[in-house]
Length: 384
Image (tube, rainbow, N blue to C red):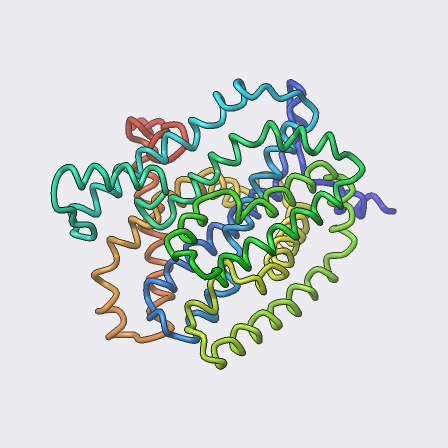
């Protein structure tokens, strides 16, 4: 193998002091691509009707974002801690506030926002407080906050996940197989509810770790075998790219077939449809393969490297803020639709949402309480 090949196939990472895990630049790009798709799916949903077959065809593959996030969460946690002993109390003290504080802050904000805008109209102060309590327990204050609630559940379980991985060393493929069977069963249960199971029960499952356990464990197992998996991905990028195209075609075919069989488009594209599991795995692997290809050619200090690093640093903040930016743009949607029509409506609102979100994040990052509002430390104001 030549020096250039060795550099290309080696993990893109920087040794860090104090025995910490090396920094993986490909994870920055993976996170950036996934967050960009999160905003896109929310914009497509906000600018199209629920019965629009084409819009739901676009949304169907974009549902991978939640699974990719939890695969990334499992990967990062294990990669950072696979060589050390985990003390649950220490781990929770360090990790939980990073998510719990923004969760509480934004849940209360969106609860108040929904009251002011009339989205929620409780009959009394007591009913309003009951609604807040329900939102805090279920992650229902706004449509993206369930992710933070599930992330906290992953953090609570993580010390035992590490114990499970170490106890099953050498048998991780069987661990993933069992988790995959459970995942298929959970998605079948959520899609084809047994008689007597109410829809509200299913909606509450969305905010638990159960529908995401396989992807979290998948990322965790990959982290335990990082060097071997990374090398395999480097040798099989074309294979993963071909699999991505083939599985995407099969996914869209099945979606359209389901719709033509009489299923409502929004139901046929539901993120917990069992037929989406192969697509989720294919796209997660393909994005990582592309990210490693990029990181192998990354030049420190280049414009692209700085942009990805800057965006990755703000990715969690952008996730927290973008639904508010989209809500602010909501009154403009009918006017833009009348002027430009589809699909330009979605394109214009998408870039407008990104631009407004970045402006809001940059302002919030410089205010007191930035840690609670953006999940990141406060930035210093530039001196004149």
